[in-house]
Length: 237
Image (cartoon, rainbow, N blue to C red; front, side, top):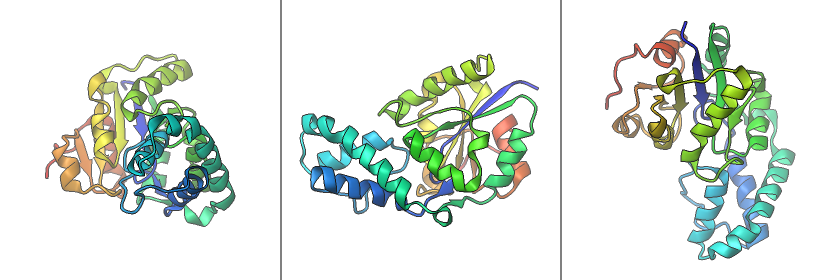
């Protein structure tokens, strides 16, 4: 079969950490900047952790130079807090995820990777309780670039290093639960599969124009078809 690279978003797509990462980040911001900014009701979906810090602190009226000066310290403190407070029971797989990952890993020619705004250490922490790190030898993370839209080329480069293969155009599929997951791949012509298991509604995801739209991964066969061969019906609202 044609080699395929499948890049998964994390929060809202593969799992939920019950809001514990957001609380750890807010605690770190309060300690470093003296404020959490407009965190109540803030939309974290599809954003990188460094971007989230910048947006929250700008919302609190803090100037960019001070944000730049203190952001790395805040993120390190966040990771330390998250590492100390996360418990296995806090992490819940989204419906059908475990079966889907196992099925994809067993498909000839399929390579799995991550494409997430999480810092890599926090992503690995979240995947640990699900024993899912073994499926993802590489990825592109918020620790690689603040701009989510710069991450797909990084993931493609790492896939080439890991496999020796150059994945072209629609050989790559980005799977995620936010509009940013659908749009971040447009510049390199890859396919997108949206899943309505996060905070973004199925209608809003459909309006973004993914190649396929799933309610969840509960039907492993339908999920595989949507991801691997594009035979699922076009996304609709």
